[in-house]
Amino acid sequence: MGLLPKKQLVLRRKDERSTKKTNVVTNIFYQISYELFAMLLPLFTAPFISRILGADMLGVYSYSRTLATYFGLFGMLGVKNYGNREISRHRDDKDLNLWFWSIYAVQFFASLAMLVLYIGYTIFFVVDNQVIAAVQSILIVDSMLDISWFLFGMEQFKKTTTCSTIVKLLTTTAVFLLVREPGDLLEYCLIMGGGVFINQFMLWYYARQAIGKPVFNLKRSLAHGKPMLILFIPVIAVSLYTMMDKLMLGAMSTKAQLGFYEAAEKIILCASSVITAFGTVMMPRMTKLFSDGNVSESQRYMKLSVEAVMASSFAISLGILSVSRLFAPIFWGKDFASCAYILSALALSIPFSGFANVIRMQYLIPNGMDRAYIISVILGAVSNLIANSLLISIYGALGAALGTVIAEGIVCIAQCFAVRKRIALQKYLNCIVPFGVAGLIMAAAVRVIDHVAIVTIPWLLIEIFVGSIVYCSLSLLYLYYTRNELLMAGIQKFSKR
Image (tube, rainbow, N blue to C red; front, side):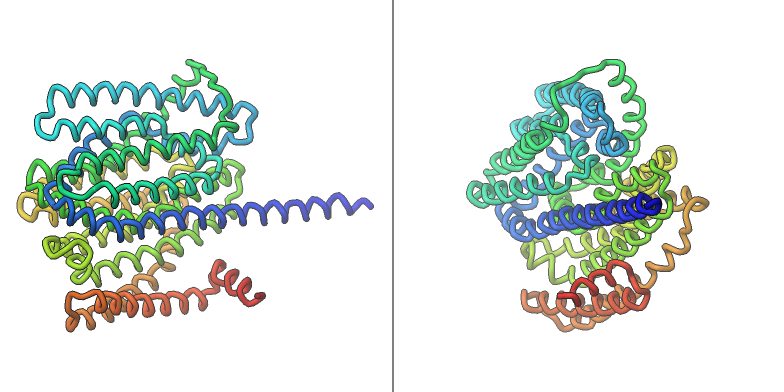
């Protein structure tokens, strides 16, 4: 009888580990499914919008939206990562609602201040397209209401992805019904901003029971101010080599070049969002593991994440680069044929951003290594500004794309340098080399076809099919040879059926 409690304890721990594994896998499934949906949706909308609005109007939209988003960023401060991390640490505490409201109070009042400033800027400084600029203020209200960080910290990914999926379907339908000519840019801005606005209300509805009634504690809110500002520094730095590219293009080049860059960047962001989904899901889980001192389990998750993220990164990066010559004119129209070079250049940044995302979201932030994170992104921002200043005036949108690649590479190297003594980087680097080799072989195979291919949809589909078969075959052989845990689990589950 004395052995029974010990046996029950062992079984209970096994059940807990099984539940945790299932939750992580389920969350990754929901997040990646949503990101894939979000990635595929522009395949229907982008060609329509680029043809209806044209490069110039698309440039006006991009410039005004980017500027409004900047004000929204200052309103959010560093709450995306800080709130996610703190909620994941304290989600089992009795005063969880106090944690939420004390953090959200900082976000609300900061966003309110940014909204007032933006309205003043629109009234006194905007001359051209003033109405468009005013409508984009909806984005700042969206930032004021955004509590996705709370649901992420609670690992409630099903709710966030469900809301976002419903809203994206509604906005896509509205775009096709209401945007019919270049003069409909205002309608397009209202639809895109209003969709996010609806999404925020849906998230509040889902979170209402967990957050409870408003509880304000000025002292606790002020205590959150400093760490939020610390994590806000990298947010601004990162924005310098994402949104600042478009602002610099708008100032140093033509609106058409900005439109080309906006179109190409949208594809890259949609594709790479599948990769960042891993970091979004794993950050709260890794924070909890490190908080509980469970180092072995955190290392296991990190190795699996590196393999999954880098396998996806090389497939997307070299796949886009291989088919860009056919993809650009087919997808956007012949006027956007030059986007092929911009798209190819931006695609090279994906492996760098993918590996850095794993290091950042699964080690630096969960372990509170904010200083190393800040330094890395500041280095990236500075290098991007320098590269943009030198290259945009000569190469236009292509120069901005090359600046982004340089910035992402420097950020990745800096973050790897920061953790070199804490984790076995060589082990992770060794396991991603085969994916790079598989990607290069895939690119070579597609390029052989590309030499004889003409710009038609059937030829594009042939290139995609051949590239997918080559890359997937080589990658699966490597994963099977190394007995990858996820692949083996999938094979075992499939064989039981």
